[in-house]
Image 1 (cartoon, rainbow, N blue to C red):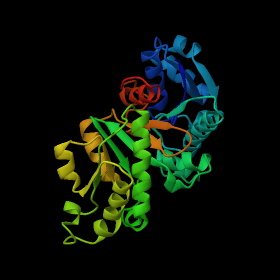
Image 2: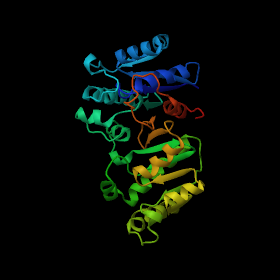
Image 3: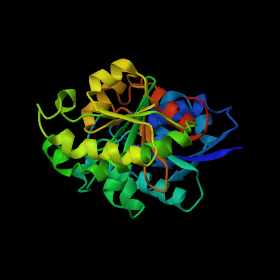
Image 4: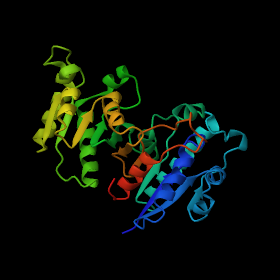
Amino acid sequence: MTRRIALTTGDPNGIGPEIVLKALDELKDVRELRITVFGPAEVLKQTANRLGLDKLLIATELRSTGTLPAAAFKPGEVNAAAGASTVAAATAAILACRSGEFAAVVAGPHHETAIAQAGIQFSGYPSLLARVCNQPEDSVFMLLVGGGLRIVHVTLHESVATALARITPELVVAATQAGLRACKMLGLQQPKVALFGINPHASEGTLFGLEDETLVVPAAKTLRESGLDISGPQGADVLLAGRNHDLYVAMLHDQGHIPVKMLAPQAASAISIGAEVLLASTGHGSAMDIAGKGIARPDALLRSLRLLGGMNA
């Protein structure tokens, strides 16, 4: 069965257009996927010409999401027009997927400063996905997949102080349940789940603080009472050293990002889960330092396309 995937270019001044074309070239003979690219057509044409992939682009279904002013297309430069282009392409792809035209969205890497310069509120694709789908932002979570790990994040792009103030037992439960649904989508029907503690050693009882006792322990109790196989909270270091679980639940951004990116540098997939639309992106950024040089690797984008396309990744 062929799956239709909407693929966006991400920030046009980053490596997004390049890795999109390289991924398409890698998958050109894969019949299980039918990919439509969303983004500024002129950027893709110029990038394809530079990479010698003009024929590939001609054979690609392209849905242009507006023009990027010529003066704003400068690989490696952070600017507002490129940030606005990123959001426009992703929004169009999400809406098309929401209408039933596509099975999922795979989005190229974004640059948060460029989007902020465009005056757009944005803290990652999960928040954008929630807004476009008319859902609360705290109902959509990020699942990182790579290096043999699957880690869902209760909080994401915010200060530690803000994250701690926002974590509740209910939010931990919601993130865990979203992660479980995503695991089933990925073919794991009864995953073993572990919750990371907030403080070192999951607070060592209450020796290192009350946060785990008041926030994570009640969430674990609720999840177990629903019949789920849940471990923790335990220290993230202890749980990851054991590697005995299919899904880990990180309370804070760095808890989940550091281990995945150490084990799968530049090759992790970031899946936004909890919304009616399934969206994945790369576990890395727009790499402005190598944009336009033709040396970017599409590994993470390929992982996302294969995951959401129902292929082995």
